[in-house]
Length: 360
Image (cartoon, rainbow, N blue to C red):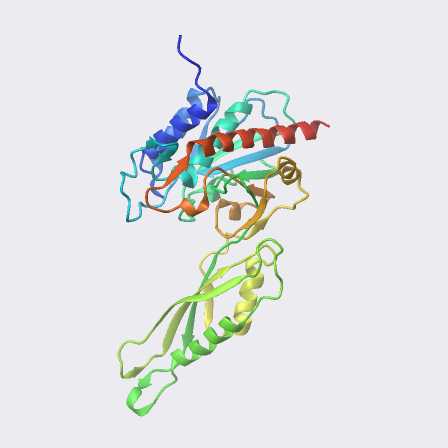
């Protein structure tokens, strides 16, 4: 008689399968299929798919109950230089599982999947559970979570699976990239003719460097703003009529993207065009039941400087998961086996605590 496979071992097996399937962001068809088949093999009655996004609800789902969204991604970045192992060959060695996507975000994803399956058949829950394994997170693609948000059932709050060392990210900075163009008039450099666009850009850049946003987030600190790219000129003897530059802005939860853009336009003369206004800084009240439950379990809170699909959600959301953010996008990426076990145990305990408190 064969031994029963624990849910920890199931999580490891699934993660090994996902590592072995290349799933570069925008090319996740095969991992989406693997997740879809896995959920069906575990008895999930209805598994939904749109593009490379997979989602399902618990067996006793009813619109009369509030829902919790469990969300993580199955796409990866490309393997960086420096790998000493095949990034697509999962290797378990000295308590670690190596492979591209093992830490970001394969570990959190498989733990959320097993957590969903743990509660799937329960009929006494005060909440529904919605599981979403999404694509294109690493490239902020429109074919990822954004594509299925209108298709998902309504939910009250979300748990987003990312490597946080099982600390609770109660706030997350966003990313706002702004393309700017300063304009002048071209002329001959020898006669100092024209109106040099570079000088206009220099004035703008100085204003941006010296500006400080007044409001400071208690969890995320100041809004950070840096000019990271500059381009101008066609040849040495021509006064340039245009100078373009790029601003990298990290918004916090105390400013909207619209407020930041209004500020930018008020302090520079250049034409300013944001690349994407969809992703927003996020936060969840520390008095929210899911955060209170985590604190009672001894989990730490922090503000996260890294971006995730949390930025696309309009509801309160908590980012938490096994693994460490510092390992993401690095050579020989890995996750500790005991981190997977801990992550799964904490996810289940956290949700169990919420369900119990909802009944009281």
